[in-house]
Each structure stands twice: as structure tokens, then as C-alpha cells.
Length: 173
View 1 (cartoon, rainbow, N blue to C red):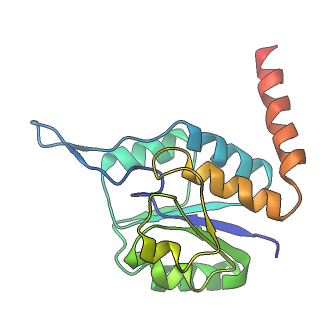
View 2 (view 1 turned 60 degrees about the vertical axis):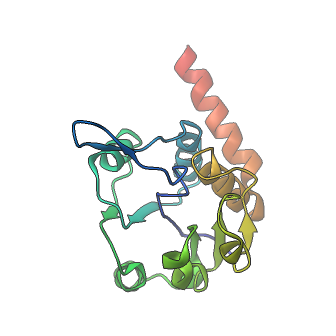
């Protein structure tokens, strides 16, 4: 299967699922910089990334902006309906999609896509239905593990990593 689109949840995948509440009333989340490598790898492999999350806070928008992820849908309660619309608009099938999520609200997508994944920290009931469980917990590089597994499955991991290393080397010059 050739992955043509990566779709990812945020909470519990890019974060540890925790919420920070500050005295000012602001909410916050902790992200792992490691997952930025996963974004870079997907871009070098020409696999677009779409973020879909039930949360809709500034911290998530800021992280996505920093990583230059341009297609995101926040505050979404019915992820499946949105994905059906997106796939139709992009002339893609569920089989073309790799999805990573961690909770019950992700089940319809996890059970429909060509490659499904959850972080190691996901509940056992989620682990039972996915194709792959990352070695890392959510918020600790699980998204990068997921992208690396996709590249490995498609036998392009070494060449994409080489591209990434070359881009780092050239930026050092």
C-alpha cells in the first residue's frame, strides 16, 4: 500500500494527553520536538499531513504553524464525516490513508484506513484494533515513530532519512 495521506489526532498522540490550566485562565499543552522530525520526514516523502482534533486551543494552532502544517481541523467532533468529505475532495480512498489516534472517538477512522496506529500509551482497547503500536508514548515522539514505520513499510525509510540528513548538513554550511 502506498500512503497518499497521513491524518493525525493531537491529544494523546502529539501530547501526553494532559492539559495545563494556568491562573490566567489559559490552557496549554506540552509537545515533543521529536515529532517535528516526523513532519519533516513526511514532507520529504511527499506525503501530506492533515491534523484533526476535537480540541481547539491556541497552543495547538501555534505548534502546527511552527511546523508549517497548513491543513488542520480543530474542534471537530465527527472526524469520520470530515474525513469522508476530504477524501472525496482529494479523490482518495480510505485505503490511501494512514491514521494515528488513541481514543474511542478515533475508532471509526482507525478501523477504516489502510494503516492504523496508536501510541504505546493508548488504552488497551485501542491497541487491540490497530495495525501498529508505536514504541513511544503520546507526547514523546509517537508521531515520528508512526511516520518512520510508514516509510519502512514502503521501503523508502533509508532514502528519506538520507534526504533529511543532507538537508541538515547543508543548513550547517
